[in-house]
Length: 240
Image 1 (cartoon, rainbow, N blue to C red):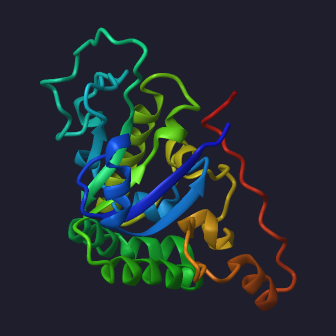
Image 2 (tube, one colour):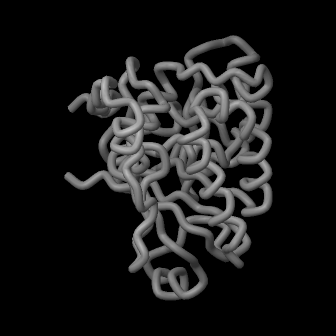
């Protein structure tokens, strides 16, 4: 089963319906794609309030009773709603204003430089420039295929925990890759960020001009011939 995830800048603030698909692509920019993951550079665009539920959806209930573990922007009003149409499964997706997402990338840049090293951080800066060049109002990640690989509400819970972990790391300026973040971005726990392939960190552009255009691991291996190639990542969240 396919489990691709897509990111684009668009004038849609939320998920388009099937009837809106034609108009959606007419007011959207470059589409980026990743498989079985939401890449780390994508995740760095968002905060907890950017997690949205397709209309009619029910929200994830955190297992922890620790108030600090619950995002302050969590929608308590709709927290326990139940719905009659069991054949329709709602899911979580990510959406933010483009300018606010870019601000989050810049806010996290110093932390990412320390975690990535200069080589990979140059790709992070390219990512910022590409999004700054887009004329559209929002950044949207479409997650319906990825959500279908897990249980009801599982992706939403992972998103809330991962973005919470990322926000705490942003405050301390030290990125610690928690197991939830690793699961969401598709990396194994022993992955070294500076040794990751470019597509693992930022996906790839679905356009005639391919981006990213280089393999980071090959460049690093050329500079450091005795360094072993990075271990292939393993998707850990979808255990089926």
